[in-house]
Length: 284
Image 1 (cartoon, one colour):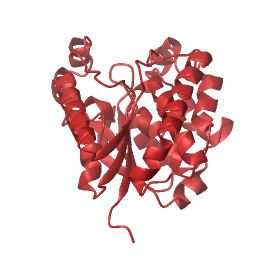
Image 2: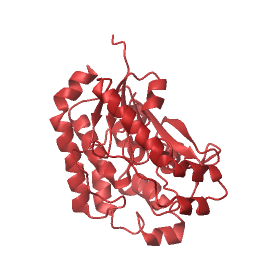
Image 3: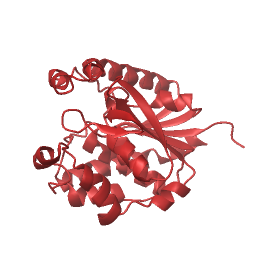
Image 4: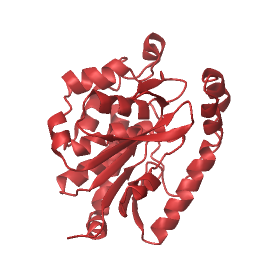
């Protein structure tokens, strides 16, 4: 019996997450599994397909609906308050157009955690998904709801937005849960570091009722860069295995071109295939 717990940690990044989708499909095709996983933002909304064992689903619905105004558009933002339409993305698609397999999600023993930012405290909160039902879906929506272009999501009594604001890569949380052999999937190339966001003044204005959010956004780049420094140190010591794009994925956060989505997805597949033996050896 093994004396360690394998974890998978998924960074967000909106449509850069197509890289992650490619990695996860290779995992599923090759029988690579984990005791638990944690995702932030796109890492949560795309990563849930690993627990439901739906190979190709995230690529499929993104390519099919990326140009539908109900999915992501200025029109959606004006009409609903959400750039990514909440009803279409979190109900119409998973319930009708490309069904999310809740039964498979619930039966998979892999634990799956989602992180979102509490707008009142400016701190990250985590939720353990159980059945892929309405509560879990709302946590996914909260985790991926970017400030300024999304409505605040209220779930379990908390008011929340994008988890990546304060915790882009939840490796510390997974370590606290006892996961001590972790694979981290990043959506930026090695050496990437954030600069201070230009939208900080806008966030402070739009979310002026929640000053903790303004403070969190003002230091987001510092927190992110510190995480990257620590991840690279852990990687160098062999404590974690990191899968990341070999170069700048060069894709916009709200990319709508199916060819671009496919390109970044294939980048993820290629990197996962290249590292397949190393991944198997690391997981034991």
